[in-house]
Image 1: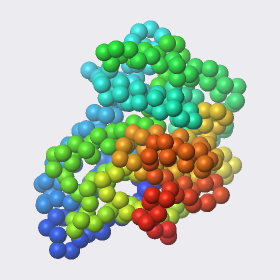
Image 2 (image 1 turned 135 degrees about the vertical axis):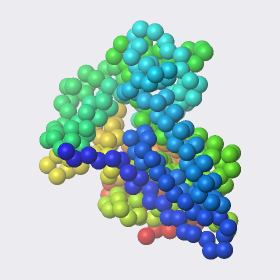
Image 3 (image 1 turned 90 degrees about the horizontal axis):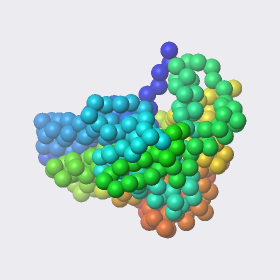
Length: 339
């Protein structure tokens, strides 16, 4: 059986040690959110690093259980519970889940409506295909009649946010999937907590959702490598960065293949097919949720639309389109080195 875990290949992290620094670099990883989460940190010793690592692992597991739309956990009113009660009753959830859904709806209503957390009935069709593909089974495209039937129940208006952190799905067929925003939100929250607890230099990489904590010892920026879509084990460019989020959506890691053609995992709600305008979109922002949301949305937009959103929401971008054309925002020109 073929099994592919989602490794952190969207963004390759380049950590260069600093001679003469008292801080040492340590690194470790764990599996959460169906991807490998890697923490790199500069600390005085391994004992200090392990404290941050264990804290990060616990926090990610908490967020994973909270945002999971497909599994129940004892004592956790998570997204699966909201979905299970669709058309029946509102479910009181943790404020963090409520806020994540609330902000995702606000971004949706105020942008190009390409990143719809209520698209879950359609997304699930593709999830099943990719699972079969990962298990070594022969797969085929879903029928358009099936996709259109599922799409009937994907209106964002089906999500009703009530007082006291309650979420209600108005139709029994409605579902929420926050896979396009959850890792960015969680990684940013976890990194901020680590920083508050004393980690002043490091990188948290959640499968392409990268949070840069402070600077390297010696007060230098970290170099973050953006993967080359044609060869994801290498990078197309590097970005000098500190204290920010860099989130990449790409067509080259999660996919299924038919007759030698790869089809990515990002579904365009207008066509109900995998997006095919860009190969890679990286969003750089102080806000991890914003970066995650708009990396997904921008993956399905042309460069002029991305520029408009960049001005509106004040984020930087790096885009590699389907013709391998590289475009980036002016604000990061001096920080980028093209390979």
